Length: 464
Image (cartoon, rainbow, N blue to C red; front, side):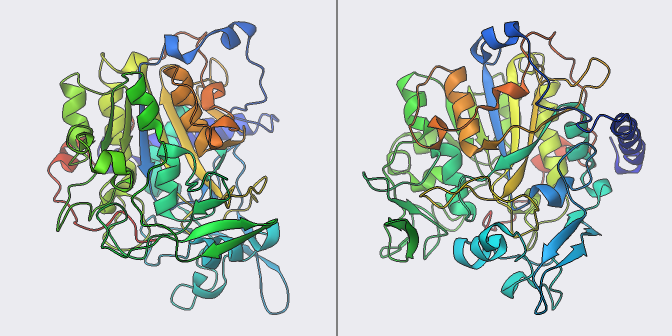
């Protein structure tokens, strides 16, 4: 669908959601509090889902993308520290393209912005943008992210997905394959923030170190001189391989040396130094399209975008991220081979320093939970609010381990025993008692062909 035609579906979507939200049901358009039937509880995803695709985008909080989505737990103002005390400031409506990269490391970002649970530190220090201390207090104009709002209105939006850890992209991407970054047997040390040199993984220069969080008594302390980022802990890859379940990690092409455009498995020694680096790491990331067309989609996929399509707020990125995601969803949805049996999970790796009003529900010994990020689930069995209103909002508390648990349960893999063991699976966002839904194409301004012919940016997916 061309850009000039996008206003109509967005207006129709907004009108439909507005009508539902005005009915007096405070949980419109859908809520996880609606009871599922006993028959649902007896049905398992493994009987219906044969492919799970995890699409990873960059650096956005839930409020930044869905602050005003009807029925979701959003906000239009935020608490901010000032010299004279906390004040509420309105969230400014902005374009998706952002000129500043806000701090989102553990100490300089997460802890300051969290402020002991007050959620009022998003304007502190480097949180200012060109002198504007309220810059992180914003939300993206829905007209700029039509595909995301359309998917959320048609399928499932999760408004209680929390990062595993209050840290940046390096550990976040590890959490999406391993559930945690625990590096010692006592489970008192976990990686945090980013390695001292790029690339972030086994291709890093000798002497590269990764900071760790160490639990000392009841206090978490940052130790800068942690391990070299070539890691030996177990990931979903180990469980998948043990059960002969196929998988691939789609990432941008490698330029200027192996791993320069990092992906999570570049930091996993068994993959980077083994045969799977050539067979299971697929570049460029647009190979996902040819694999779908050829009927070669693996059982489990992770997809990392080129920086310019990542929603990352600064650098070479633009406003093509929503179309990038839509192109993947449309390719699967329009495939008679894959639509009936595939679950697409769209998640953002970290909050990017953008304001969010919901404090993490608990703290653990590994620096989590982190802040909320958006979650969108698209499937023929994505749960419906009502027969007349397909969109559903899950208020269930999820974390990245919830995605891992869903994958583990679907393919009977067992458990990694990290955060996946405690997490609530996302399976309550599916209803396997309902008739398989007909795919509704996602409107977007750029097609699959655009991305297949796009020149790679050559930029790292993220730098923090």
